[in-house]
Image (cartoon, rainbow, N blue to C red; front, side):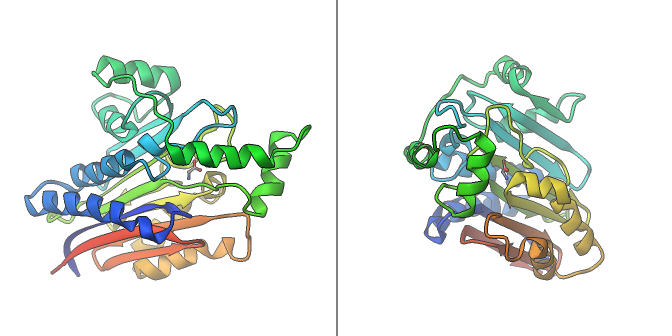
Length: 291
Ligand code: GLY
């Protein structure tokens, strides 16, 4: 059994040597938990740090869309008391996860696009647009493989399968606080290659994230697949039926076994401990205080 704890990941496909950023995020969240702050606050802080890192596909490191200039981001927060806030396709903010947190103070659950940006500005979030070195390099790789006359989806299906182009990734944090409350916070620049306007699983409850009285789940990978399987809720239901967190993450990945094209990762935290399973390498870190 654990007293409290946090785990964070940098997205499926991120090299494990980028785990130092996840460690920094966990350390900050863990200090908050030690000081008695709640799971939601700690999860959001961990996600904010990962967004600011610039080496992950979220916040300052967000991927470019297929037009080579647009950055649209998705983020969400949820706790085991039923609070959910999400933003979809938001542009020109530094920390989408903080805007998702702000949605909690409205009658709504999710805000999208221009309305979400106007909402953010009204609350004082400054305009911010940054194309990271990594996003630019990844876009160039994507562009190189695009053949003349290809439709976007022909290109997607051919080249993602051969891993010639960068895949999806999403940052995520799962937390349990000293009162036994759970929370999760997730954020992404989307799964490359992607059209302008495409929304993935990250802001969709039960798909990219879920938190309930029995645990917190953060999903990373090809959002379309996660949405089709409602992956986060599927894994949550397993832990809610007392399956071990590690076993539940592994079972959640089973439908993707042998499908080279589909990169997926799942991080879960329960009162019994932490589980993580991924089809590819994944930067991650965890800090758990045992009871
Ligand atoms: N999992 C991130 C995305 O599909 O957008």
